[in-house]
Image (cartoon, rainbow, N blue to C red; front, side, top):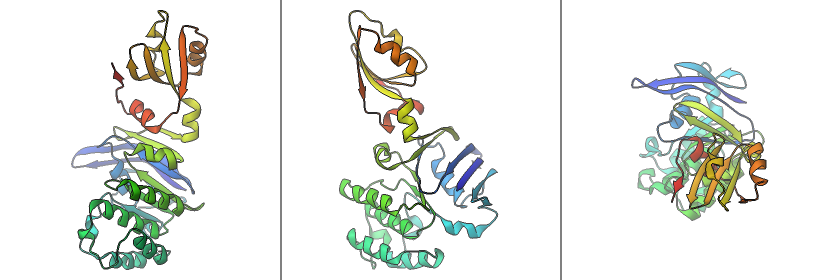
Length: 291
């Protein structure tokens, strides 16, 4: 198990991480969410040892990653832009990573490059941003490291390639491996993530599995009729996503309030599919729309 324990980190006299804690179990895809500047990339870089924490620790099966550098072979971090590889050819990158990661899957690497229409002789710097992301994610998955950390892997990738990339990520997951994805593409995590970790102000704000989220939060469309008062929704357990006249689209965390509203014959209530984007807008402080 990968365990992150109360990590704190300052960069350029700014407190970026302020006690982040979460766990990644084998076989999980974990989504790391947060607004820009909340420390997602810094957290990933600290996990793999690019940054040393000011306090706290990262352990892999109980071994401190920063105290035992050899453990880092079980971890790989793929940034949102492969600038360090710009001067290399694609094939050179594969051979270089194969020397670092003992389980590197060269067949997977070469076959996937062909699948995306990439040649080993191409220079990384000649690729479009989207193709760079396809290449670097393929490179990371090919390491067969136990913990693969991807920073915005679908950023700049077109719709067709994005579907292929998400399929690759799913196929790369094994019962012994885990993938951590930092992204703002929340609709993608809806399909593939097992667990969500929300960072806010450099701290772990909330952690959920998708199953827990769906059990505890409802998305409702409520129509107030016959003079019913919308003040019923003015409670901390309710977040109004949208209001158009008497029609309110809300998120609700209270079963008691839901039962109360359901018994009110002046209300028309429909339950809607809950998405991560809905939940993220609420928990990250985003405002709903009113008209």
